[in-house]
Image 1 (cartoon, rainbow, N blue to C red):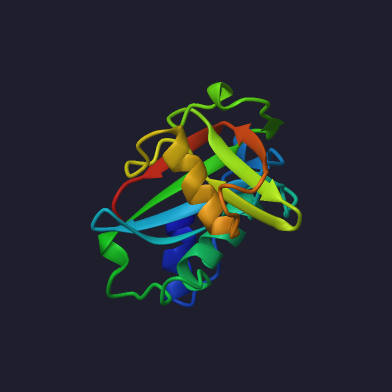
Image 2 (cartoon, rainbow, N blue to C red; image 1 turned 90 degrees about the horizontal axis):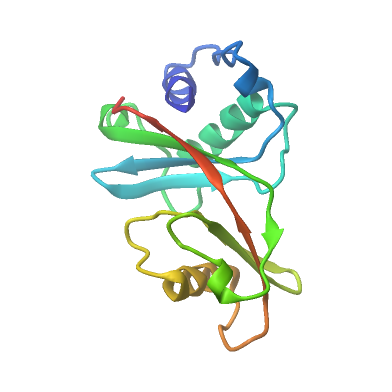
Length: 164
């Protein structure tokens, strides 16, 4: 669905409606990730649902990942057929009391200190272990690892889409 949304947006067409399946009517947060040649090309998501249902959440985050991720230029029509899309539907975050409750393959993490917050999805190729996962999340949040910070974990349901 994320792929269809971006194709329609690039072609200046009406965006597709979400499929009618019950899954897309759930109220859930998600991240949409776009990769090109195995490298991240855009990734935007929500930790709490911002839309009425998952279908609308995917539409919102797909557009943001393709055209609004400040780390990358907007996706173009010329590169569209070289892109891979995935959607991670987030489970509810839960507080973590000890590092041994984490597993970088099975849980994403949210780190927070005061108003700063960083998120990292689970099962990323470049993440070697929990310390690495927490370090990246802290870096994203601007948290110095020596600072005391809260940790939450969450599961995801990852939906992969084939090459465009």
